[in-house]
Image: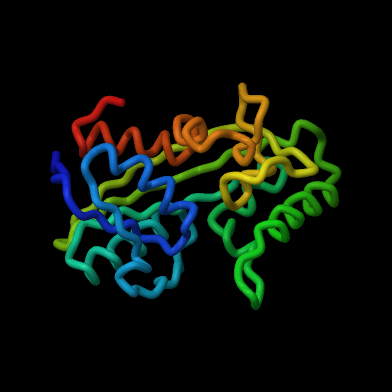
Length: 205
């Protein structure tokens, strides 16, 4: 299996919160992490209907444009009572003319659940798909998820996205209330990353 030598790695994202999570996970392995935004890249259109498809678009775009290996993540919140929505459209629910408004997105989820009179607990899962792409076109896929329930009113000021309304199974805190180090141990992205680390970095963490 192809390995990834320590060095520069492009994270195919413009999301600062996501970049910091990746930096915390990768720098201990000897990688200098830069974002697609650091290279002045635009964000490619995410035209696929799956997490894998959209992650592939971002990873290959960044790898081809920079000539470096690129790691992309497509992730989202899948709410059981909403038939898996917002899913791959997780970020779209936050879009406004002035940029992304995650409070608005969480309110949309809560309103949709109320409209359906969804019973408690309102279960959901965070899903993450990572794609590592090389400039020569090869790629590898790693998936992870974490289950939990949604809370309202939201709680916590840490994290990003829908973290303030998501309480993982077995935990008393939402992702936004947790110390970032704890979140990075149990998150959907951590599950996918651990698979990536075992396969690509030779780590069994």
